[in-house]
Image (cartoon, each protein chain N blue to C red):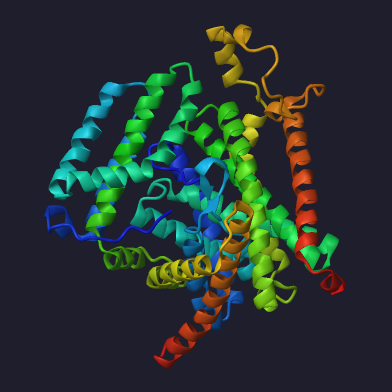
Amino acid sequence: MRLQASFHLPPSIISRLQASVKAAGALVILLGIASLPLGVPLLLIVPVVVTSAAALLSRFPPVTLLRRLLMLEPFAVAASALVLFRPDGWTAFWTLLVKSSLSLTIVIIFSATTPFGDIFMLLRRLKLPGILLTTIALLYRYLFVLADQVERMRRARAGRTFAKGRRLAWFLNSGVIGHLAVRSVERAERVYAAMRARGWE
Amino acid sequence: MHIPDGFLDAKTVAATAALAAAGVSMAVYRARRTVPPAKVPLLGLSAAFLFAAQMVNFPVAGGTSGHLIGSVLAAIMLGPSGAVIALSAVLTVQALLFGDGGLLALGANILNMAVLAPLVGFALYRLVSRMIGGPRGRLTAAGFAAWCSIVVAAAVCAGELAWSGAVPWSVGLAAMTGIHALIGVGEAVVTMLVIAAVGRIRPDLVGSSAPVPSSRVSFLVYAALVTSVVAIFIAPFASRWPDGLEKVASTLGFSARALPHPLIASPLADYRIPWIESPGLAAGLAGGVGALVVLALSFVLATALVPRAQNGR
């Protein structure tokens, strides 16, 4: 998996909606798509129209939307392929692929039009337990820091390694991950000290 | 193994969400009692670490690559309850921000990868590391537990897909566990290498003194949860095993056209041993043999990774 640089969509009707409204709407649409039967392709017209309307209203650049969809699509294709063993294989395959692509599009639009802060406030209003909220907040805060760190460590490692080979790569990558684990634990100690100094609990 | 949206129907979404909520609630309850405030930021940093570690690609054959999943690594570093919380946070952020795994399927994904995988993995890790003992035993146990956690999560995932009526059980189980038995070997190797690397720098983080608070009650609750998930999603299918694929094959008439001998005969093909009649038993046996092979391989790799002088400790 690769971290995508977050980008800003132009303000639109959808991005101005409250996060709770957007989340509820997305869940209703997703449930609707999930409850459609496989093997009746005509019924798919309804969610296709709804999803296209959502995509238009969000002012998502079509190429960007498609590119994001294609990046996430391999999982859906692989899982859909298992359906080919049903008696109505091909119809079920295409219906399932369209269903999962439409659902993916909805999720992509939701996450692109809702900043993390809004999502986090929504989770907080849903009364998620505090320790889980703290974990999610710190995860988001340090995810990009650690992603940068792992990239730096890998580049440094590559700069010092003159041999190539699959087995060596497994050892070196595992070493990078092990070092990252230790540095994360040590960073957690510093973060705790900093949080205490600012009056946390 | 992230299930996207569109594959699970409403009843499976509801059932998996309820079970995942039960597992996460129990973990939160335990973490409140066992995780001191000083360790709370560690959960968040570990979650970020797991997320970042999943971005390191390991080259596999033919240009493809895989990455660490880290359920057992998290369970060893944080204990089972902490691992459940950290992994749930990872999956939640992946679903909400990166579209990796569906929103409706979040419950199922948390249940498979953030509840079942670390709990099953941690129980096996404790069991095997007590049986073998020493640093070598802990490494062996980590590799074995990592493989088992992946295969169990994949089998339950196949059960959920079959529950939804999307993928026939026999096909789903064979494909999911077959592929993940291979992925699990990679996961086992990487888990062992990472733990060995951490052990060289900070042995206290993964050694015998690593934090593993446990109580009998929480063990029973977790065991009951795991058992009921397996009973709900796997047991109903295991009794009527040879369905879908065989039926389809015979109706389409390609069972007659099937090759008399496969081009490459695999040992234990189809997870079934030919001379044993009951298919459920045979599947269990094949899984057991696979587990034993992985255990033996883990032991060999652990012996190679641990310096000889340390083994007595």
